[in-house]
Image (cartoon, rainbow, N blue to C red; front, side):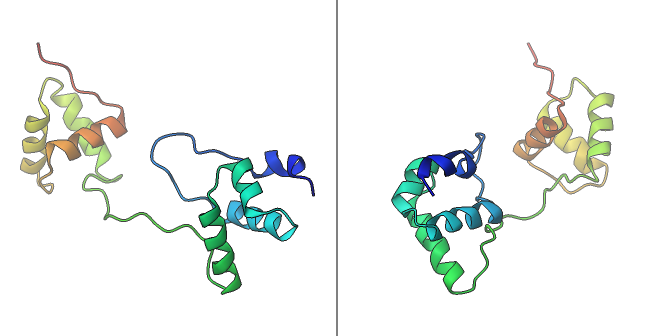
Length: 134
């Protein structure tokens, strides 16, 4: 199979932000391309996937190991999905509060204490930017 025919089929760049692992499906398709006669260098040049990743996936496949991408480290969010309605209500009730004041209010209402960085990330995720003080 000529490399030009599979270039569109194999490509799929990351859309920015933090890099995510390639999906199992994509890994399998890349390994199928290698099995059909394309070299790891040709596939790497066409798709942007490193040759070391291709060889590692080939070894894993030969050993019968899973091709699933690894999960990201870290624990659950301190302000999770179930807490978001409470946080939204707090911000709407106190729109002029600073991050530190929101953190104090959050802890005062029985939630676990959080840092200003955690509060900032949660507000950004909810699309609730803080009002800038003059």
